[in-house]
Amino acid sequence: EQCSVPRQDPLSPAAVADRQLKNLSLSYLGSLQEPASLKLIEDMFRSADNMTDEAACFKILSQTDPQTRQRSADHFFAKWKDHPLVLDKWFAIQAQSILPDTLENVVELTKHPSYSLKNPNRVRALIFSLAMLNPVIFHTENGNGYDFIAQQICLLDGINPQVAARLASCFNQWQAYDEHRQILMKKALEAVQSKSGLSKNVYEIISKALAGQ
Image 1 (cartoon, rainbow, N blue to C red):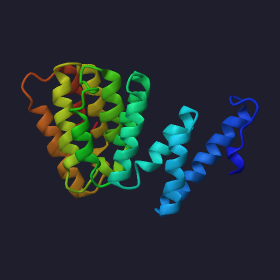
Image 2 (image 1 turned 90 degrees about the vertical axis):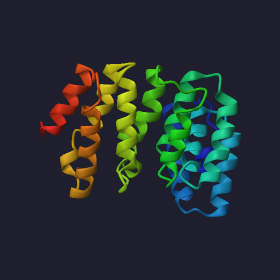
Image 3 (image 1 turned 135 degrees about the vertical axis):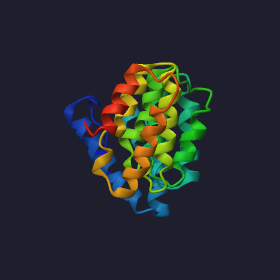
């Protein structure tokens, strides 16, 4: 509440600090998963008058439950669907959710009309966010996260080998994980390596990873 008091200059360091502390506090409240706290966050999300607050609340709500995540995602999209840079944030926030159904949600988002493998920024927002900024989902024990990213690398390789190679680097440290995950990650790497017509860009990354370099 103290950090929600408007300041004369909303771009001043003090105002920026207020927003950061307010949103950190909201994230703590959101982790409680209490109805009153979630209602507060959702109310602030819908009444936000700046992107920092709105995106922060959206990110918190995306970690609560699938229904709340979808409701807030629909609201955010309806408001910002004509703003490409904001839509990148929309995709990224959903891909960073640690809810159990996040991978399934990301798969559905790859079919969204606003998503395209030919758009590097959109790919970074959705696919890179899952692979490099969401270890909970990427490293899920069943290996589905690895398989999905391997498939995306292969698809991207025929469109933008440089972006595909950068994505492939998410497997570079596969030997640092437990034996079970090592087996699954190596299997994913080998699946990419066996792709017919694999680009030199991706092949170099994959072969070095498998060689432990």
